[in-house]
Image (cartoon, rainbow, N blue to C red; front, side, top):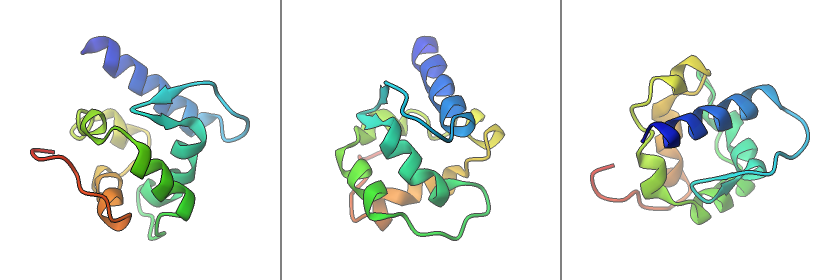
Length: 100
């Protein structure tokens, strides 16, 4: 679990810091481009709706994997609002797994 958390932290740091370019990684079946397409909709204080590209990324994501990060405090530290992040599937008409 520590390795998984470290990978997620690295991914979030890259998403937050590296606004340009494409990093060659995938987290929970979401590519860098997919993650970046969702960033405006999950940033703390955002009122933006997810884009078509974000919803495509969410539809292809391993939601059970993403649920493992639901209560990770690093999200808030990186400016990501967990409530907004976990509202994306519903806004994209995708069901979250049970117990997420």
